[in-house]
Length: 443
Ligand SMILES: *Cc1c(COP(=O)(O)O)cnc(C)c1O
Image (cartoon, rainbow, N blue to C red; front, side):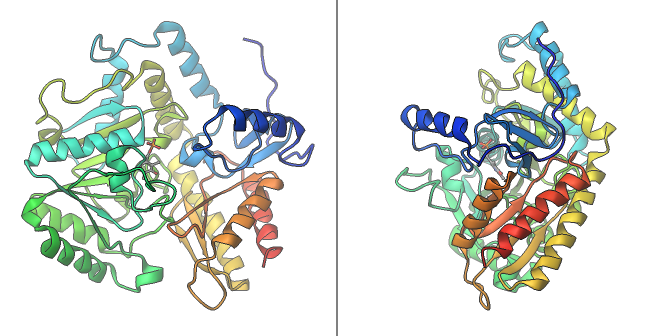
């Protein structure tokens, strides 16, 4: 393979974004790719390194989204690219269910070791977050012999049929894609900005609903993101998660943490659950787990995971050797480069800057999140009315200035930052400058 020159870690604008080459590809895309698949900024990317993406026109963009919390270790980290290319030379695929390999076992050991809880654990690997969530539900139902699954307002768990049922938001995820899987019940989520409830009171509201509308004896599992991702980086009030967790323990209900977005250093800890000492029975991982390769994991109490009959869990590509090699290398980089601590530092920088901005303008209702997962919620001044249009304008303007940001939120009014942990302070601040300029020029 030809040596490629390093990409300088700075923003470079060579054309308007999207430039002419990206626009030409975009025209082809609109003819060839289903319009049901959408992209934010139509700048077509050719290379990435560190926190910089280079598009077809040679623009260098600052990546503050990490491909939705995936590229935490940055793009083209040499430890990851080496692990991938070496593994590709040795073995690309056997299907673990046909002919197993040791690296799958090693990754399972790593996940069992690193996830909260010092009881005996087992892991199964899959390809995507949604697939791992589905398997968590399969395990919980089989192990408990019950069917009801409790999910929350604003939840996002994926786009497959079962996970559409688990996901809250209709557009764009569910609209006209039904019928949806049964036995899924949605209850209120703690949302301090909007419900003004303590964690204990918000939990009581949710648990009362479960008791009255579902009957706790029918519940197989409570499934929750410890910090909601697509739903708007909603951090539940302190005490909410511990109350739910205690209740599930008391009732013999499986507590499933969906840490697909929050896991693997993102919140300044290995897992967001650790913040309040929550020990889930099952924990779902994906996104940041494998440095960009498609991989997910389901890890949890052995007595639940091993209750499943042989052959009940699996998949042709699940735990693919190249993806597993990338995950093991990713874990190594996270340890060696102390990315847990770095994620926490990034959070301090982002939070300080956004809070300062929020104090100066009246369209930011809330700055929230943890570690390298911080967002601001945008509203019409003097109210809590969501301002999705302003959010969209800011994200678009940032893109035109070569800074990739993402929006989220049930009402589309949240700008979220998910930078790679290896980004420099300078580059991060340059990205935050662009966000500030875009916001101030839009209000
Ligand atoms: C992204 C996400 C999923 C779905 O993962 P895919 O790999 O896109 O299927 C599930 N849960 C959460 C919390 C997510 O952020």
